[in-house]
Length: 279
Image (cartoon, rainbow, N blue to C red; front, side, top):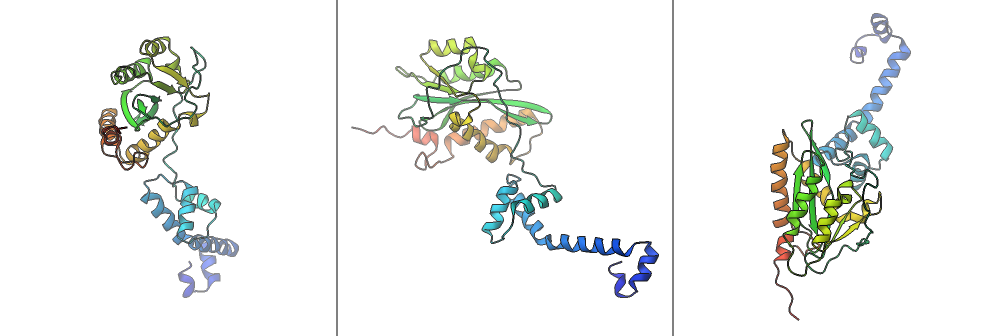
């Protein structure tokens, strides 16, 4: 009707379409408002897809402002809703805390995340992945000296064997007088008697975060965030087996090839392989 009105009287067109004049002008006004944001929608979509769906409306708002667009976050949130764009980096976090079922260790680490030698401070946690209607759980241990993942285990269920097998792998790294602190949250796996007895047997001092405070275990939480942003969210997996294979490859890359500022531009393994300073 908008195009035909250039050649025919609007009154006749409205009568033919059985459309009220007020309805026509209301719809025309809405279309003009929509067109007003057409270019902004394109830019929102470009930013969203450039970052593989990792940006929500707040970060897209910041990105647009950096490009010189004076936009309000509420407008961006509304337009993303119209475009059906939603950040993919907000899955429900796996939480292993199920109350006090065993002994709770004190927070020995106290957010002192710097270590002066290998096997001095370890941190661990469990994270969850969902693929093709199934779930996979990853349990790693990180050495805070160089940020290396020194042991890990995966399982389709968050069972006790997941952390027990991981722990046995890590304990094989100990040499002579090594007596590390092993820090975790208060997850039920870490409260199990068998797990705690294994730590005691090998002289490992157990440490736990305060309940509900993920900042007490920030390094391993940061690793999970990096793992998911750089690996999980950038790929499509058809099965748990495919995901497991990819995890092994990524952790090998993370340890051996991925450089970090904290290691002076070296990967964790390169940093570990440096000759010890002579006095």
